[in-house]
Amino acid sequence: QEPCAFAFRRFTDLGLAKSVTFIDEGQVEMTAAQHKARGVLYVTQASNMSRNHAPIASIKEKFMEAMSRFSAGKGNDKDLLDKCKKHLEAVTQKHNIMHFAKEKFLVGGSYNLEGRFAEVLHFEQNASKFFSQFLCDSFLAEEVHAVRKLVDEIMDGTPYENHFKDVCKTIRTLEPLGQTV
Figure 1 (cartoon, rainbow, N blue to C red):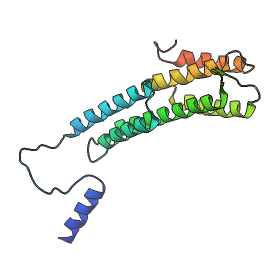
Figure 2: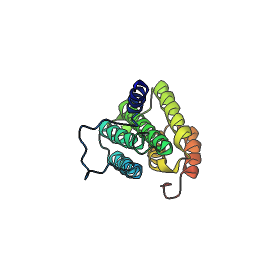
Figure 3: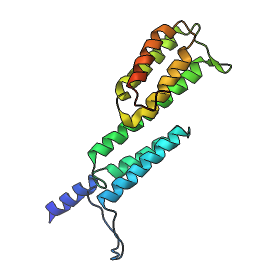
Figure 4: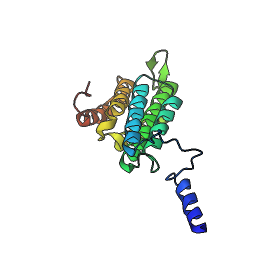
C-alpha cells in the first residue's frame, strides 16, 4: 500500500493526478484538447493585449495562464508550451527595448542620440539579440515588425543611420509579407 501512496504523491507533485473532495457524476473534466484550445485562446488574448499596449504584467499573467493549459497535467503539449514561452519572451524583450528607447532617447517628443554612445551600443546589442532570436518565427512577426520600425525611427537622421539602414533593410526583407510597411 505504501508504494501506491508514493506513486499517487509523485503523480500529484507532477500535476498528473489530483485529489477530489467529492464526486459529481454529472461533472466532466476538461479534456486535453479543451485545455489546449483554452491555452491557444489565452495566447491570442495576450497577443491582442500586447498589440493594444496593455500593462506588461497583465500580458505576462495571460501567457502564464496559457502555459498552465499546455502543461503535462492538462493539455500535455510540449510544442505549444515551448512556443508560448518563446512568445512571452519576445513580448517581454520587445517591451524592454521600447521602454529603454523611450527612457534613454526620447526627449521632447523626438529621439535624440547625441552624447549617448554607450546607450546606443546597449540598444543595438538588445535589438540584435531580439532579431537573432525571433526574426524567422512567423508567429512573432508583429513583435519583430514593431522593434524594426522603432530602430528605423530612432536611427533616422542620426550619424548611426547608415549602419542601421543596412541592418533594417535586411530585417525588412526577412519579415513575412504584409509586415514590410
